[in-house]
Length: 161
Image 1 (cartoon, one colour):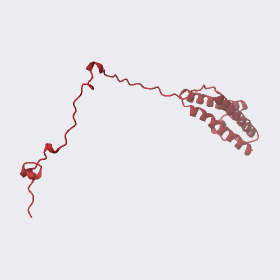
Image 2 (image 1 turned 60 degrees about the vertical axis):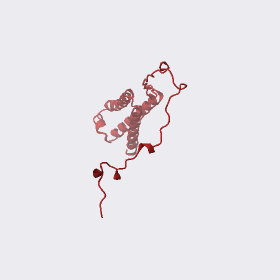
Image 3 (image 1 turned 90 degrees about the vertical axis):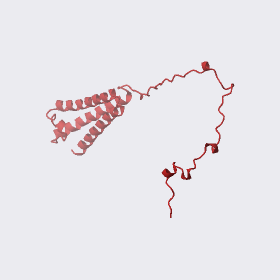
């Protein structure tokens, strides 16, 4: 069986030397501009594009001593006071402090009271730091965690007398 000649032998890439003709293509549409459409060059002005960035919406800022924070700090101080009373009662009846940090202050009642007062002050300070840095969820969460820990300590102290 004979092989067809290669395109290089025929002088081009088309088999048989038949190149497509341009006459078989459809004609392009007429693109002449009529005088009705033509505008003078003075009527065409370039448009300046100016990029404008809209300000990002800021979350609703609140004051630090708003009603919710004041309530959370009061509840936190209340649970710290209850924890102090239960801890002092248990220590007076032969119990021992389980918190290693508070254990250093169990030698005297004023030292133990100072520990719980500093705890409440620390919660307020950490919340204020989160408020100033814009972490408002953490600002509230600090009080929730402290309230939970103090309430847990009071319940544990009352059930294990």
